[in-house]
Every structure is written in structure tokens, then in C-alpha cells.
Length: 402
Length: 233
Ligand SMILES: Nc1ncnc2c1ncn2[C@@H]1O[C@H](COP(=O)(O)OP(=O)(O)OP(=O)(O)O)[C@@H](O)[C@H]1O
Ligand SMILES: [Mg+2]
Image 1 (cartoon, each protein chain N blue to C red):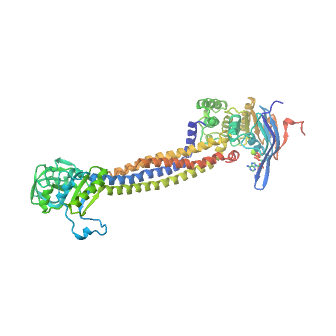
Image 2 (tube, rainbow over the protein chains, first blue to last red):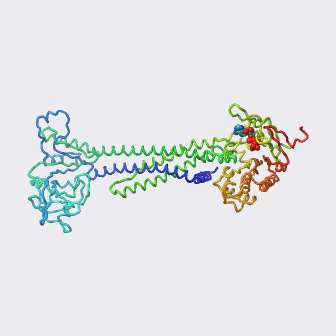
Image 3 (tube, rainbow over the protein chains, first blue to last red):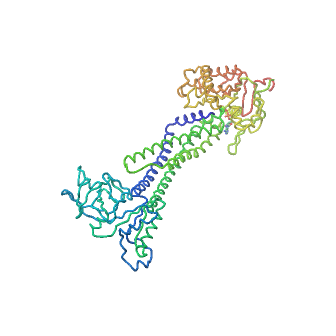
């Protein structure tokens, strides 16, 4: 039998019983669609978290004062119970680290900002010119803090998008003088609106030079030092260097905590990757179930078409021709199911993306391929038994069945 | 006597049902020459269908030799037997056995499709067959849209489309009224006139009387063969 004839014959046999065929196709389609949608959700969650983290700066190493880990008995801790503060000098010292590309000291406090009778409470961040790169922020207008000596503290400020809107509305803000606490500063830049993020919301931030902030709050301590490693691979080295330099400066005592964004990210990445895999596994089980369904429905089909099989044999069909015809039918049904399921699944993922635009619900390619291959393989595999049964039928008995 | 087309020697066919044995065919010796017209008759259960299935290579004997055109076909592999069925034998059944989802034309083309004949040639031969059997304007109809006589004509067209040497018909008129049945018999006789060996199983003595040779079966054995009249008792 020629291949096109075989395919046409199998197709006619399948479409000859529409209910049976559509049920089967649906069963396989649900399996594939489940794989596509569920892995889109799982991988979407992973991507979402990874994106959020990298928007903060994924090569980020953060130095905070105090030792947050309780690492057993430490004689140094026993002697000096109050940890040393982090200072601008500490931050400056970290610039020596070869694995460190740039850094920004960060002093944080709350204060009031006022202009033209309008007043609101704000979080003031004292930092330096490289903060914008380290935190991956962008400007809507003007420029960022000038690259001046860290001790100088010029009277200039960069404000968040929401602060700008509230204080100035539609009027220009750039170049205006505002009062922050008891200081008068000139607005030199406005941050681009970032929307809600995982970290600190920069839309409601007022940024001033670190020296100015420390003078405002009458303190010389830092809240954090944000360090950016040269690249992803340099993160562990940057962390080690930061610890070493600060330990040296703090009389050999490691009284700071250095955390890397990367470690947290990797954990999330791994966790959500496993989740996606698990979800894919569950969906694959539904495909095996569909495969068993394919087998049973094909067996029923063989039973129903016994007389036809007998006839085909009488007309000169070999066992292998009959086997091929039934296998082709099972393959076709699972292929149709796989395609329908793929389309349904992609539509489902697209719907999720439409409903939650910030959620990147794209099914990973490996999962889609695995879903399609599993559907096809299980359809063919479970089609073998019915096909063999059909080929093994005794023609005389098959023909006498009516 | 010219070389036999079909030669059965000492054929036995025994069906075992649990402990009991049914001798459907017992020690059968028959020889049929090319182009013969043979009617197989006998009471129900006498082994007529079993004989025909055996001749059509749908069944194997438990003992004996079956030579088809001089070749021992009982020892052939299933694949080779399928090939012989495809090329040398045409079946006509009592209940037509048309594939319900296929049209008349597709049913007629089925043996050619199974044999891997190219679509072009198939179409030509089907068109000719439809014309020969007066089915031209029924080509696209499915079996359930055809009368019994038309269905059997489709079945005969299908049985002859591969130009077989032997047509085996098991009660081809059993499901038809008298007039339609006679029409079908006429078709088979026409085929026989063209040189094809026709072997018909029938209960109808009138239809059986048409044949040039009658085989009378009884309890699995050949009771009477009109070709041996006078020779045997
Ligand atoms: N598959 C089978 N298993 C068991 N016994 C069988 C089988 N096929 C036929 N027989 C028996 O063999 C004998 C001959 O059967 P067969 O069908 O050849 O008779 P027949 O002459 O065609 O009868 P009818 O005129 O009723 O069609 C019967 O006794 C029947 O019961
Ligand atoms: Mg019978």
C-alpha cells in the first residue's frame, strides 16, 4: 500500500467515527495544553523573579553593618558587643577591590520636602554619583548627582517621579529650589518612573549627596554600601574583597555582613526551575493517561471494525499493511491532539499574559517539545497493541462477524 | 485432461471445540480446471463455506495438499498467501462486505489500493468497472445509499478489479430477491464466459443447476460430483 493511500485510508477511518476521534484528540490535547500552560506559569514565575532581581542589579553585593549570622562563639564578638558603624571612609576603601567595578554609599533617613507651600514627608537617600548605575535607575530629566568629592555635599537633589508630580504637577521642576529638612537644594534631575518593584520604590525617593544627608541627619554612619561586581563571575571575589578590606579597617574584626543578590537569585531560580519541572511531570502523567485512552479506544475500534479487517485480508492485505493502517490512525489522532493541545496551550498562555501583562507566562521550548514528543510517542506506543491485534485476526472469523 | 487450476488432495479440516471435534472437511479430493463454472451445494453445516475459505487461502487445512496453478499454496507464508489472494482470487460474499464509509468507487478500488497500484491506473479501471456494471451514476454513493443488487454489483466489481483467475462466491444471492439474484448470477456467468473460473456456494437448486458442474457436499465429504457422473457410483 502506498504511503498517501495509507494516510488517506487512516484519515477516513478516523473521521468515519467523529465522536470517538474527537474524544481522543481532546484527551491528548488536554495533556499537551496542560504541559504548555503549566510550564508557562512555572517558568513565568521564575522569569518574573529573575527579572525583578536583575532590575535591582544582579551583580550587586550589599554591605550592611553588623554581623547578622550567628556563627557559633566568636571571641572578637565577645569583646566588642557593639559593632562599628559603616562610614564613607569604609566605602572609599572598598574602591581598592579589584573585583569591584563601582559602588555607592547609602545613608537613609526621613525628612520633609517643601516648595511653594506644599510639603510632604519623604525618604532621603544620601549617596554618590554612581548610585544610578549601581541600582540601574534611569533619569527622566536633567542629570544625576555630580561626580564630586564625597565629603563635599553640594546642595543639589534628584527626586523621584511621584514626588515631582505631587510637588510640581504640570510645572517644570528642573532647576527649582526646594527645602529638604533645613537645607535648600536645587533640583538637578528627576528619576524615570519605575512602577512597583520588588525592592525600594525609587518613585518616592529624594536623592542628595551623601555628605549633605549625613549633615542633615547629624550622623556619619551609612545604612548600606552598594557594590557592583565587575561581572557575574566576580561576585564571590567582590564579596571576599569587601569582607577582607573592611575587616582590616575594623581592627581585624568582621563586623559587617556582605550579602550577594546572586545567591538569593540562584536559590529562587533553582526552586522555581524545580517547580516547573514538577508541574511538567504532572502534566506528562495526564499524557500517559491519554495514551492508555488511545489504546482502549483503538481496541474498541478494532473490535468494531473486525469484519472490515477480515475483508481487507480477503482482498489481499498483508498483516503488516493492516498493522500500518491502525498505527497510522493512532499516530494521526495523537498528532492532531498534540497540535490542538499546542494551540490551546499557547492561547491559554497568551490569555494569562493578556490578563497579567507583567507576568511573562511563556512556556519554555523544552517543555513544549517534550509535551509534543510525549503525546506523539505515547499515541504511537499505545497504538501498537491494537494494531497488532488487528493484524493477528483470523480472517474467516473476522468476516463472519457482523 | 488439461492441467488442473485447483487441485485438492486428501484435504482434512477439523474444528476442535473443547473436547468435541467437528470434521468440517473429510478427505476431500477435487480437481477444477481453468474456466470452469462450479456450484457447491449441500445442507447447512456440510462444509461448503469451509471449503471455499480454504480455496481462498483464508483458512489452512489440517491435512492434505492444495495446489493452485500447480503450486502448493498451503505451505506459503501469510505474506505470500496475501499476495496470491490479491492477484489470483476474488471474493463475493453473501452480506456484500462493503466498507460503509467508502463510496462505491472507493470500495471497488480497495483491492488495487492495497496492492499499491498507482492512483491514475486505479481511476481508469474503476471508471471502466462502474460502466461495465451499470454503476456510473452511483460512483459517489455510499453502500447505505445503494440497493441490495447494486451493493452486490459493487462487490462483484471489486472482486474482479484485480482480474483474478478464480472468483469465489459464498451464497452471493442469499440476501437478494429472486430477480436481483438471477441478475447477479448472470453477471458471474458473464465473467465465466470471459474465462474466469467461478465457484459458487448456493442453497438454490435452480441457481445451482445453471452451473456446468455441481459438487454436492454432505457432512464434510464430497457426496456427488457431476463431472464424475457414471465414473463413480
Ligand atoms: N470456526 C469454527 N469453529 C468450530 N466449528 C466450525 C467453525 N466453522 C465451521 N464450523 C463447523 O464446521 C461445519 C461446517 O461449517 P460450514 O460453515 O462450512 O458449513 P456450510 O456448509 O457453509 O453451512 P451453511 O450452509 O449453513 O453456510 C459446521 O458443523 C460448523 O459448525
Ligand atoms: Mg456457509
